[in-house]
Image (cartoon, rainbow, N blue to C red; front, side, top):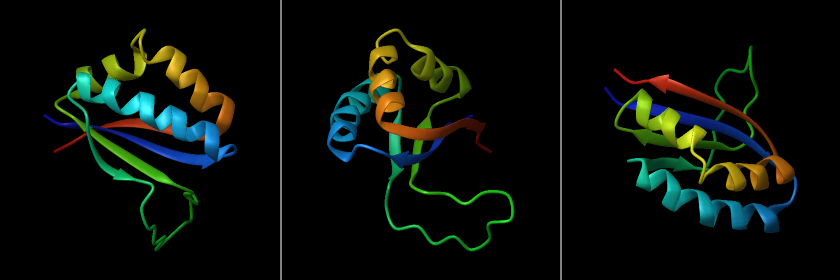
Length: 96
């Protein structure tokens, strides 16, 4: 069953974040990830619980693949670039 890594990102340093994006994508793809949304137009219809900023959605074959990507040793230094240059919320949700 598919799983999705969903990230809401408030970018603080756009130039440095471009470096993060270039490095993160091939790692996600190595774990079977396919980007489904990456900061495109956002139409917030309701925002009682949350007011999103910039949404990224990566589809993985399953929860294990998504978790393996997020927790991988090769992603750790790339994740540090994101942490240094953006505030994020990250969730993994199982598909149907």
